Image (cartoon, rainbow over all chains, first blue to last red; front, top):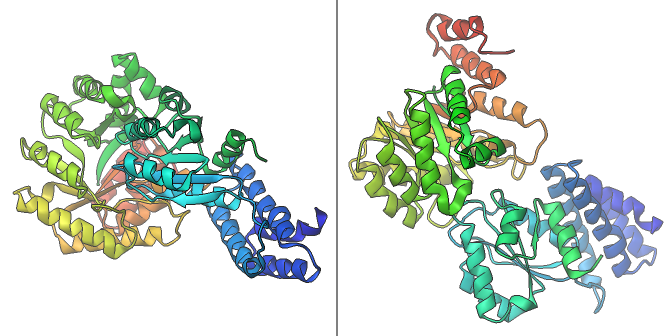
Length: 212
Length: 265
């Protein structure tokens, strides 16, 4: 574990130059791509997510770390081999129909991607039929929906109903979030989980799928 | 500067609880405090009640207007709620808001042309949110032209340049300021309005960011703001900046606010 502390620290600081150098150093020293990824990069992003949830760090710091991780991943990519990248789960995400807000949704995608989930982002103004169609196609573990307007929140319920109708509701976990969304609303529409921010979205998703 | 008092919004817990209980005394008190602090309009928003929004919004209109003799800003993306609230409103309300999103524009147009009102024109495009100054100006121009084309008076339009967080993109602040400046210059007579708190999402010391942003907005020509007029530090910034920009004759408003304890340095 300790081998990757300098790399993790650089990712946490968002120091791209040092992080790239540490990644290269680890490869030169013969560390496996898989270890660099999991014990260096993903571990750092997990830490950032936790700190963010606790209010210890702020959005720009999260963005900077995510950017740093992306750059390091690019360096590793040519050496990826089968089995190096083990996805924590597949997440189909989008902002619901009638709603064009994407900032919160993008932060969640970024943090979940950083934590090792595979993200399929449908963008904004996503009709329930689109969620269903894509869910049939990619068979996600989680369907995650965002809404920033009280008027578009009902589209979350519509999507859940549509998933049910398509026989998919038992095959996926549903997560919701967004400024006007509450735990109470999540229970009311029988979503499996509610996340109040991008950091807790990661921990809630792991809990839902029973992964660490 | 036209001040729209933002506190009567059910996304605040204390307000949601008061509205749920129909606590008219509490609502009246919050309305009164904002009026005394210098609000020109009182914003009312019952968005968190979802299906019951229409009822609660109408109740808010009647409750607030029986306490203060001010027009209200009727705040909802829901055309039905706006049209019902408008029917109960005395005087000329501000409708908050219309945008280029097709359903919203189509269903609100008959509402805002049915009786005299002012309208907040939110800089939201048909299928996306603008980010650069140019995109914001483009969307605003289209909105202004569509509204005035329907006979809506230019001076009753309040363009909201759509405030987005600087934490996510550090170019956001200057893009919004540039849009305010350009819109005010391209359409003499039109108003610009915005809320402040979105700018500071994701950052610490949000009040500090909000009030400095307000100062910049005013300097770039903003003519109306949705804010908490009972925040004495924020009002101090507003009045000081107006004075420094030569918008306060004999520094009268500034001195008056100081002598009446309405501002805090």
